Length: 233
Length: 233
Image (tube, rainbow over all chains, first blue to last red; front, top):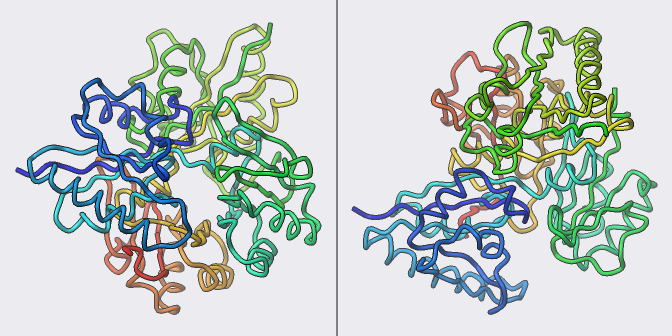
């Protein structure tokens, strides 16, 4: 009997926003796996830390910090091989994923490599989008409104076209793209409708109007923009 | 001291997909509130049932089954008044919300009515979108991909334009709009990329290619469409 690979969403950062199932799977795990950035801390492991039992084996995937694809893919190749050995030996492996595994998550790289050979179960998690909306007190979408999710690294012209054609917009992974995104939103005359959020649900959380956003935004930052009619009716 | 109103996301249906915080707030609640459709069952209450302690007071908002706005708004007016009385008396009220309170959730109607007078805290939940993706084994968005969320009741021409211009698409609230949506996706030649899911995470869950979808879809059904390049690389 081979083991089961669980891709477990941990939510946006506050361990209290983990699901009951995520918590149970992690607490009972004998093997956990997670990515860590360039030999540094793993955000996923930090969220799950209190749930990981002493003696649990940890498979760490060191993902290099670069926008080039090949080095990261090599890290996932290596991680997938190590996970496969554990699964072949009949051990279940719980892979820790920030947010939701299938929503801009790196778990899909492991899923791609292992889904045809093993039983892979995905446990959804709270995404940063609804966590940010909750913290900003900003309903995202109601009734027949449309919501568009855009990654901040998109080119300026595409961001502009997409924001123009949408109602509610969530812009993920703002980070160093903040000046470009602010300029686009300014040009469209929408700055007063935009909220900036970084590290939602964590102690260092920041929530403010986009006009007051800090100059340097971390990777885990987001802009929410709602253009619809007053959502309060 | 007035009480705090908590808008608590319960996730897509499986009680195990509630967050730890949601579970703790509900278990400790002395007053819960929730909508019920036209005097019938409340899906939100059903999800939370095992966490509600005996003796908890329940404020039920009977929402009439109609697409007209006024009757539903009257129900939320009445519910908000009843909740306000409890808050004024210093009691906390935990409002039970399917999915996430700010993602196509009716909690925003209560939020609109009470946020200026009371302390309102929103606890995000797992949305049906990532729950459906998890059950369908379908990564939603990676890297710089865009995701568009569309409600099924939108007019045909708008659905077509929106689907055409998007990469990953999630179409919510399919229900009786299924034939119209299928026709649009067929015309665009995208049926083979589309997955149909109903009642994700519940025992009666259905997951199948859109081409094999049942004729009658319940309100809680969704179509996921990913047009991007092979997401497995």
